[in-house]
Length: 271
Image (tube, one colour):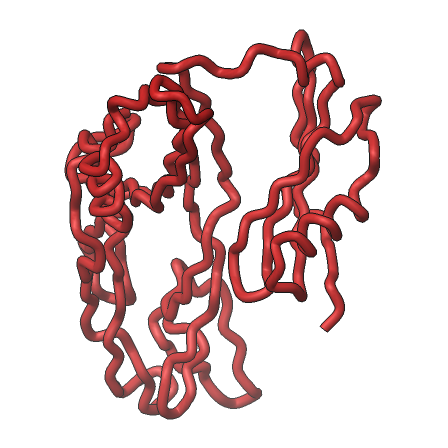
């Protein structure tokens, strides 16, 4: 399959002022090589944008033969700026959202039936067939953010690296960065030493995703459902008689909220 490069909708983020910059964001498909993905993104992107030269191309794998590529532009003078110092940090975020498969709508806004018949009432079930409820994939709110911290060498011990490993794939057991317990999932950290000297610090980027806790959810005639952001809600369906259309239909008869991630104390991140 040929390699393709497509600019994403959330591309063209830019800033003005004393430190102007811009980012073009692309999706690269059709290669499992990071070097090929980076080269294709560099070839596709313009050499300058808004009067600023291209400074860097960063790629990140997001699937099989699928990459996110970020091309950064800034004035050449910014390349001479002072690098972040030990103890400093930077922050970035993305509200692009995630994808979820659902089998229930929030509301049925219209039903249409053949002349002389009545459309069955499925109580919000989507894509009902004789044997199953097929559902649909939708975009759901997922707030992804990252923090890059510059930690002293003495703090980044083997024990600390192990703590980061153990917290990866866990949700916050307490409040974190303004979010309630259960809303933030730690996606992991990447780090590198800035130099080879005994006092050279570590640059570590921590990645997170946030999804809101919700209460008062309804599924068909089932009400009062509560779930935390990273818990999983699924619905059981059963055959029932719809008296309006005089047919047997599938309707939600029970809803289940499942915990699929362990909790962790994010204080162990040391940030």
